[in-house]
Length: 592
Ligand SMILES: Cc1ncc(C[n+]2csc(CCOP(=O)(O)OP(=O)(O)O)c2C)c(N)n1
Image (tube, rainbow, N blue to C red; front, side, top):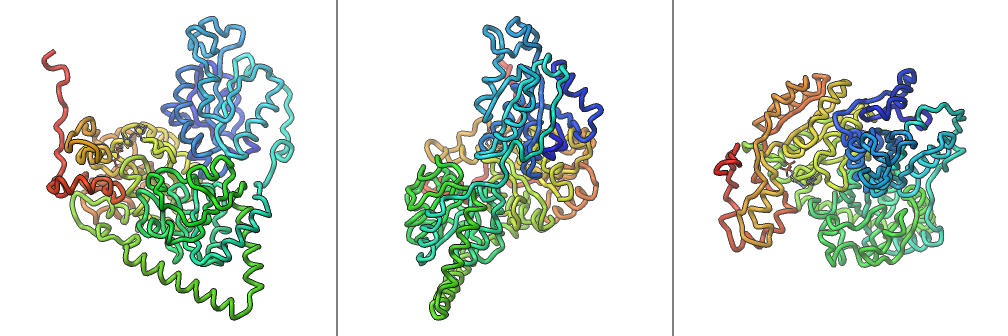
């Protein structure tokens, strides 16, 4: 752990992990972070890994703790985040004998700890011979950090953890490769040719560009080609969203500009890097999405040609592949006559003017709702105020629900790694991951944008942040309900009768009393002009802080509303009708 640069072990102890924790008593380089729930430990390890670029380590005991921990590994498994999850166990001598929380997998009445982790890890292994610890740890590190990165799980029975073994700590080069694989040079040459000859090339950057740390190479290619750049939501920040060539995020909740350009007829050759052409990105696999010809660079061959046919598929990591592509393109430009070069420069200028005009017309990051003084506060305005307050290099996370959509479309990101969301939109993930992010990037402001519903799912970890004075600011956009669900019910999900509201309302906790109960800073904001001041006081408090912003439950992200336009044609009154607020508590037992 120490050699891999990880400083924290997130988790909860128990009898089976007594030796593991006891070891940390004298080993001060690794600080144990006691969480409130093992899922929170996995989420924090995930956040830590994303922000620090290191491996995230988390731990739990047997069955119940392990089941909780595994639930937190699904997100990093999908999002390719390197994590080592260590669980402990009773000695092998009693496996299958119905010991307390039997996790041996010996049926009946036993929890199969190895199998349970298999679906959310790249490798799940019970170490039986302590002498093999070095092989197992180095293999775990290799698997977690190479290829498609992701979590691994090691289970340590008690007899293994209590045994002393002599282990030499090998240098990193002895057990894992350095650098990333580049795509096939011949195919990259063909890609350079296609892009060089293209009339209107564009670029689509996915999360793979961020994972590969390839933003500089992306910028170099984009500027040389004069190609506009859209990102997926997972790639948001890979290209500065205030760059003239930036189109913003493409897809369901993204920018109209990106959706207008990344399609057939508008883009002749699309260079797509580290993206998976997901349902959200392609707006339900729209036929027009992408370009006339697609060049797809991805580390995973399984992604190439999966959803859209490609002209060229390149298996490789973004950074070295784009670096080589840039060299080839540069050579081509250097060989041009000055007349031809000027002709191309003129074409680039024309394309840029077209893009800038489109951005202006479509009100790229400047929609009127962002300036609304309405109360309850328009979420668009809340996001604008948050952006205005934060440093340029602050790290922002967003959670599941409408707030995910608000942040995606209205929060402008200028630098790579400063916008962190989970590809699964797991409610409550960001609330815990933010704590790990702050530990991984202690000098940066860390702010989480979350919903009132999501906060109530995992908000208990605020106490973990308080325990260790980890000053994260949680901005709860409190629209009282599960607004993404309730709005869909208002419009009958675009599928059936309208206004059939069910399980999308509830009593919200008093978030300010919750903040107080957690010894955290808390402030409630009702008017848009108060947001900046509240954020300032929250960050200045030096404590974990909750800023609750009362937002309008009837505001719908434009991307979602498209699905309901046809319903409004039949029920025009719904466009202005506000959703009713249910009254709670109800007496569910009455009449029994
Ligand atoms: C763990 C998990 N459970 C359920 C869901 C389904 N879901 C997605 S958003 C949502 C409601 C979110 O409500 P809130 O956090 O208040 O955000 P809002 O939509 O109001 O902005 C639900 C239930 C999910 N994404 N993740």
